[in-house]
Image 1 (spheres, rainbow, N blue to C red):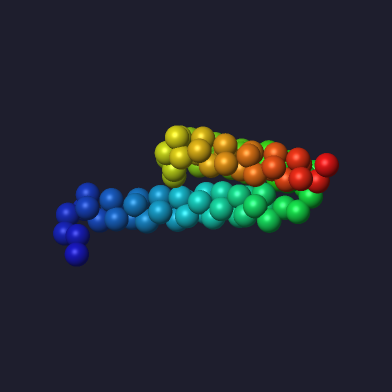
Image 2 (image 1 turned 30 degrees about the vertical axis):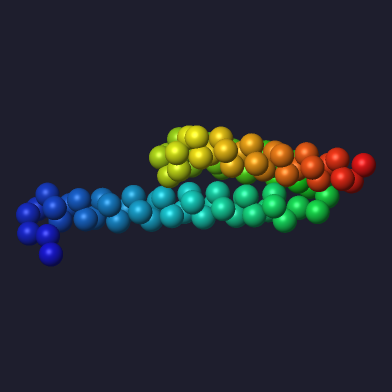
Length: 88
């Protein structure tokens, strides 16, 4: 167990940060799942914009690396474009 005041405070602040990061990560994952689960191209494009925004915010907050966010955004866009192409 932490003995110094500073280490006790670090435990408290780390827990707050963990919960905040968990909320951001959960919102991000939900947005991504909505895009992946889209069956219509129009629905996919609307959800894609929201998912990209969540990914960018997660990267800005340091929850995921910016290159990881870029990679996920690219893969989601590729998926939606394929969906749009298939529905034509």
